Length: 62
Image (cartoon, rainbow, N blue to C red; front, side):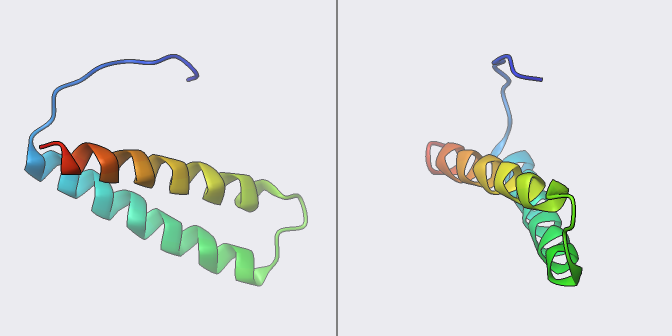
């Protein structure tokens, strides 16, 4: 989970990943509005935003 890997993706595949992660960000943000007593969703949201930014950077290189 914490290692690095390298894969080859098409522009379409990157787009689908970006959309999926974006939808997860929206869903987790809604969970946070309901309350996050254990702090789990806050950490999850930060991880998703990091993943989204990495996908965004990769999309610019395609």
